[in-house]
Image (cartoon, rainbow, N blue to C red):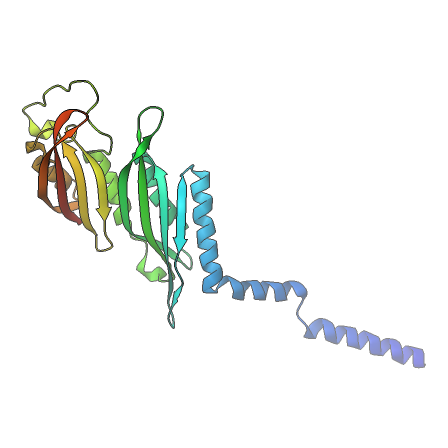
Length: 253
């Protein structure tokens, strides 16, 4: 009789525990869910997504600096600075990483960018560019992703290039049609787009008259506006006379 009561007691206790306590898997899922929503873990995931993308697409990341997190009651953001060494054709590919990783609970917003021609080049002579991107990782997903910088570089490649248009050989004189030769007679050595989408460009042109024509070509893309020649100086590039110029303008939002 006592044995029967003891067995019934054990059975009831087992049933009570089974229904009262959540399973270990449920507890782990709950913990993971809480962790996944913390700013720190979300930021780490975003950074891992970027690093994986760059490695997968052979984009050469040179350095990265992550600033302390800025947290308010309902918002957090992490300023990040990334440095790259790449070719002109790889710039849209690098910027696409920010768009690809955005969505869900976080957005990666590139705010500003600088590009300059380095002293290095590929075996085929293509110049390697040093590019620095200032971005913000934040949880304001309602704002959506801003692709202004990506569009700016896509339009840039249709107008001009970072590749010098002068070689060691004597260059033929440009055609009289300035519109036909503006893109081929000028090239850019430095470009900067600030967080307010103001633009600064430094470059070289074989003829002074090509510089204002280059401004017009930029504006025709619909992405650039208020392009203005701010200065030009006669210079020598690879033993050829050129005009070094500075242009300011804006990128459309």
